Every structure is written in structure tokens, then in C-alpha cells.
Length: 324
Picture 1 (cartoon, rainbow, N blue to C red):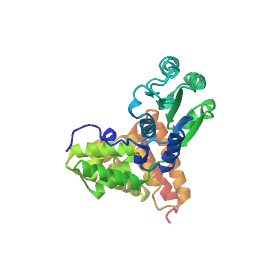
Picture 2 (cartoon, rainbow, N blue to C red):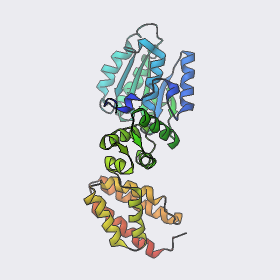
Picture 3 (spheres, rainbow, N blue to C red):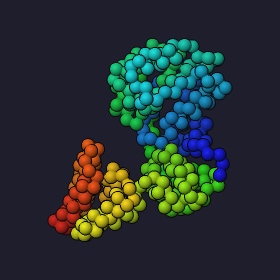
Picture 4 (cartoon, helix red, strand yellow):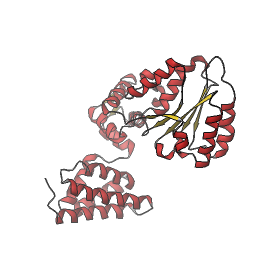
């Protein structure tokens, strides 16, 4: 095993062409490199899809040896107030670029965490220093960015990565790190990562520390997730009218395996969508899951809420002929 440092950084792409699964976006960014011009940018999409990597790779190719001093990266969720925009961001933006580069770049990660006052201050800074600085706002939800900023940006929407791309990258990393990764382990990583490349790589690294062979057991133990078949069996027991069996399976997950009630309810949501039942019944079940998830976030007891869901599923199965 090679040195123990974060594989997400070790295998982070250095060039745009190395970024996997986002070719339409990287092609557009490549054109900005050729034209030596760049608008303000807004990168939106789920976590782990390459948003931060894309702007760092772009800046690396644009600046080369002059990267330091011309690129500033901030996490807006940590520094989200108006003072950060007025002081740190403004002081960086107002100075001229170093060397013979056309402009500086400021990357604001998790920009949707900025307060509205901070966003309005940012808009004015973007307008005032456009000749010397470009901004790249990175967020999960573009709807949380005020319209005056959105209208000043070229918007790039990053979709979730295809499982084939994640599978290929994980196999490559496992080979380089001399980790034995089984097909079951790979499938388990894809299940728990949900299209998030960063999370998938982190899970692979953590599981490889736990045991030499990364299989499904290592992955689910590392992540604290239930096996999908355990969730499926619990649901089937409830839908077959065996509420006490379903309750026992739930108690095993919560008490003996120590899993999070929030994680279980989200996995229940995933498995409900896979059930071979009438779609109208799925709608009712998803509605029940959503209600329970809300109560959990408000501080309700996980075992009571999940037991309530299983009981409602059992009653629903008894009152409807819903099997295909």
C-alpha cells in the first residue's frame, strides 16, 4: 500500500481532459482557454461531480507556473458573511494579476450558503472589478443564488456521474494502490456513493484500511449503511402482513448494527422505488416515507417513526390488491 494520504487529492485530475463523465462541460471550458477570455462562472450540481476539480484544473492550465497569487479558493459555508466579501474577496479582486495573465480567478465553493446581504455585496464586487478578476461560484442549488448574480454568469450544470465512469476510476485506483476490490465490493461502493465520485473514492480508501480485500461486507461496515437486501426483506415482511418479523429486522439494524435512523429511512425510500407493486401504491408509500423523514429531522425517535412506517405499510398491503 502506498503512502496514507487522501486518495481524492492524490487522484484529482490536473487537466480538464482528465475529468471523467463531464465532457460537454470540459469542452466548453477548453474553448475559454483558447479564446483567452472568461465570463463569471456558476457551477451547479450534486456533490462529488467534479465542480471544484473543474475550476482548479482550468486555473492550472490557464496560469501554469503563475498559479500562486492569481487563484483564490474560499469555502463560502465557513466564511459566509458580508465581511468576508467586503474584506478578503474585495482586497484580492482589486489588485492586478501577477505576471502576464489576463485576470485573476476567485473560486467560492458552496456559494449557496452565502447570506443574501453577502450575495448582494458580491454582485457589486463582480461588477466593479471585472477587468482584473473573474468569479466562479460553486453550489449544489443554483436557485439559492440571487438572480442578479445568475444573470452575470455562464451557468454550467454538472449531472451525476454515470456508474460506468465511477466503476472505471475505482478499478484504476484499486490497481494503482494494490487493493483487491471484488465485484460485490465495487457494486456496494456504487450503491452507497450515489453518483458521488469523491465519496466513492473515500469509501474505497477507508474500506481498504479495514481489510485487505474490499468486499461488500467491508464497504457496508465502513459506511454504516444497511445492505439493500436487508432493507428489502424488512419491507417485504411488512407488505406480507408479518409486522413483527419486520419490526425484528428493524430492531436488528438500529440496535445491534447501530445504524442511523435517517440513513435507514433514505434506504427505505430507495428500495420502495424498486418494489414490484402498482405505481399508485408506491406514491402512497413514498409519501409516508417523506413524512417520517421530516419527523426524524425534527428530533423524533427513530425506532418509533420507522416502526410506524412499517405498520402503515402492513395496513396498506391489507387494504389494497397492489401486487402486479
